[in-house]
Image (tube, rainbow, N blue to C red; front, side, top):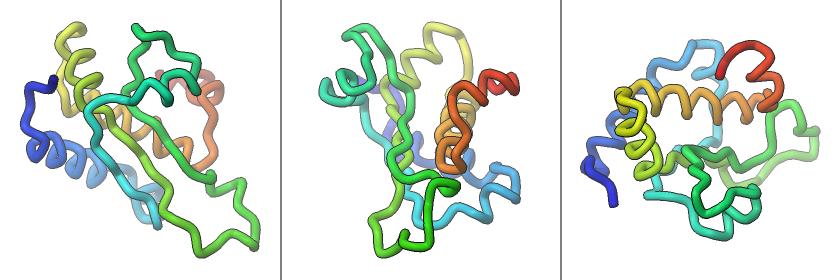
Length: 126
């Protein structure tokens, strides 16, 4: 389904993480970056995506600003990048994979910090 080797895609994701602004990158603790081919149908249904909807990334966890002093001893938050969907989007839009991975990664990490989709739109992030 994908055209790029998974290892090459992982290297792109690592480069994108390394380019996060210091104030965000230094505060990422207990966050796992995962590469999957594409989301399963159960994920698409939960997010109200039709079979043609294309999810590029997903944040799963408890945003930092929603945590209380009881928060601890938990599994890592997860940022999932969907490689096949990102590649397909890049092909269709004629854009570079690194730029799209960086954008998706920043978007999902914004959710980790408690920034909503509405707020991201309001500040012109997408």
